[in-house]
Amino acid sequence: MSALINIGYLVASVLFILGLKGLTHPRTAVRGNLLGAVGMLLAIVLTLTDQQIVSYEMIILGLIIGGAIGAALAIKIEMTSMPELVAVFNGFGGIASVLVAGAALLENTLAAEIPLVQLTTAIAVSGLIGAVTFWGSLVAFGKLKGLISENAVLFGGQQIINAALAATALALSCWVVIDPANGWAYWLLVGVASALGILLVIPVGGADMPVVVALLNSYSGLAAAATGFVLSNNVLIITGSLVGASGIILTQIMCKAMNRSLTNVLFGVMAPAGDGGPTADEVYGGKVKSASPEEVALLFDAARRVSIIPGYGMAVSQAQHPVASLAALLESRGITVEYAVHPVAGRMPGHMNVLLAEADVPYESLKDMDESNLDMDQVDVALVIGANDVVNPLARTDPSSPIAGMPIIDVDKAKTVVIIKRSLSPGFAGIPNPLFSLDNSLMLFGDGKKAVLDIIAALKDS
Amino acid sequence: MEMFIMGLTIFVLAIFVGFEIITKIPPTLHTPLMSGSNAISGITLVGAILSSGSQHTMTTTILGVLAVIFATINVVGGFMVTNRMLAMFKKKS
Image 1 (cartoon, rainbow over the protein chains, first blue to last red):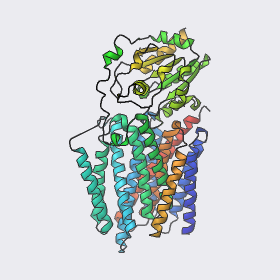
Image 2 (cartoon, chains in turn red, yellow; image 1 turned 120 degrees about the horizontal axis):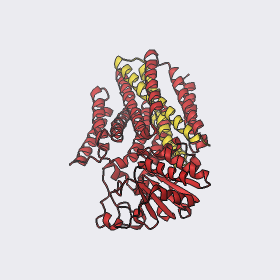
Image 3 (cartoon, rainbow over the protein chains, first blue to last red; image 1 turned 90 degrees about the horizontal axis):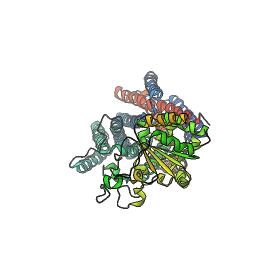
Image 4 (cartoon, rainbow over the protein chains, first blue to last red; image 1 turned 135 degrees about the vertical axis):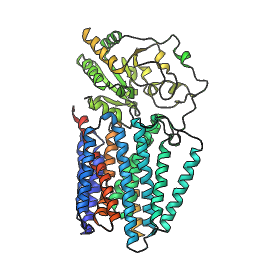
């Protein structure tokens, strides 16, 4: 029977891998996700047949409560809040690992046998990573939601406290390994790891949140893998390592796209605000041209190819639906419209694509940064809406700038650039953007949604 | 110990499989990738079910049930929200 269960777990693991493989293309992605869900159902059903289980009431109760909460969250969540939801889910995965490892430890000590060192090590690792993931994710959630200051919260001696907590957590882990019969060591470890999780995420600034959410995603996978070692269960080990790998890759991509090293993100270190860099007055002084919606409409009328560069500001002003209607209107007049999406345009990896897909933008017109930079010089009008640092040419031209070397969308190479923005205020990097004062740039000042609606009205009038 | 080495082998090999597949996923789908991989990391549910059903003591049962609740939220919510997002990508094509 146990051999049959293990073969079933193998099938489930294969389904998870095929499911992830399905995500490599939007056409196969829905099926891929379903394959993953089928794999999960198989794993659950098989586990329910395990002979260790003597009572089903509590399991069914837990499944019903959890299922109802999960379904309600999934149905009600706004797409703009997706990063918060993923953060919370990461955290729940982490706490589940803490609880399962805690229960396993208790069962083993009750069995009055001395548990193996590898088992107690796995239990300590599960508790440690799981608790860091849970509390770190809750802080990330609070920051994304605005419940906790979005800014990097820094205080004196922070590194020292973190180092002390990490050392304590390691010492407690050793205690759990050496003396598993002592029930308190494990929960002390969980407590210290919780404090560590909170303090690790607190110093991270709002702009760096995508990196942290990706990293916590990876941790939640590693916690599941560690629990797999606790239970000697291969399906947990395989799945956990898949998710761990996925989170690490996304973390790397995000760090690269933001020009930040992982260490700087984790310790809340911002690049020095480039002293000696040009001031706002020097960059903008008398050179910024502002345009009316009517003038922008005239530009579009004469264009053959338009590229839209959305930033998080677009999502904040809920402008994605008007933007999609503007694009549809332009396309109905024979103009080619595409979207150039920077990897950190949203609050988590790929977030902007989801927001645009929600507004019925076909994925064929969504281009990634490299693809759109290839022929930016062929674009007649580049419309930047709610983005700033990711289109700042200083990243290419000024080696002393804090964003030097950051990959950007080269909108300054388009024939004309229209920037919709409330004011000339700087983005997260805190530096002026020479793009706004280029000869081929026009500023359309105002709220993103209203500005786009005004352009649509002007286009329809002309 | 043999069990452990076996597990470690599987762990390392699966990480390589993960790297191979996930580097091929386009940036457009990175958010669904995160929520979807999140859902499958709720596989801890398997362990939670065993803990809550084997009824060693009251404490292990309570720990198990709480773990079942958290992991099920993760699994059900993760798959459903991923499906919701992916359906939006599919709509027009």
